[in-house]
Length: 365
Figure 1 (cartoon, rainbow, N blue to C red):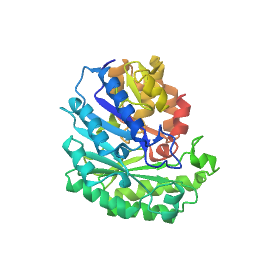
Figure 2 (tube, rainbow, N blue to C red):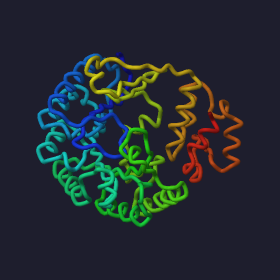
Figure 3 (cartoon, helix red, strand yellow):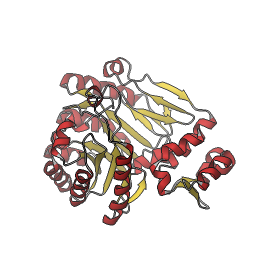
């Protein structure tokens, strides 16, 4: 595949244990299977020819650090040829799968940002989620990474968990803030079919409570220096995720590995989520051609996730049309309803529009 992407995502499907809410492509770690998967990754990578310099790499999963030291070393070595101009190199980490040797390995291969699955410090909720860490181990993991020079650290949190209270959420957020991360991602729980939560018939909280939690998050984090630059993401100044901004600005990105997706020009592509199927043909992808209307809506959908909104100049460069020419009536209606606002440079969601962005987007559909 000839790719113009400047962002590279690699999906590592292996986990030492499976979280109750997880719907991503995952597989319990097996050493032999991981070795076969690495062979497949090497095959797929060799099928790519990048015409642009890669600027961001993101190792996600699954749990990349669930690999053994030697396997993680091989994966990072396979990616070394693409790192010359990389500005941000992120690896997802669970505290129980990182040790000093792996932390040093990540640093030696250029990883400069870590995303840690913290989720909550409520021990009962962690048990329900099948997570095997606590706030203390998260703090120790952050200290270990910083000791190796990986200082740009993001924490993932979840809210609207079954049985979670506002008091529990506030405690978890304040505990996270006390650990001084550079970036915080806060996601509301979605129950996906086939997950352990779904099989146990558990559900997220009611819409009103979930909305109250989100509103509190939006108001609280800026008090501690974290500005909301995307609907679910908050950062200290200059610590916004460069890789994720590639998605939100509707740039091309390459996806490697089972469960990974990518975008190239006028089409998206997806890999199988089945590890065994991927091993048989790692270069097989399912392409989805995008009409101009599809592309414009996707650019709108991603751009409105950003606090600064959809840049109308970039949109016009992409499609030769102003945003207001494409959706004049809908934009006018949503502005009248105080869900959207505009400036000379952008169309953006108001605070209220942020809270019900899916409803706003449905209007455009």
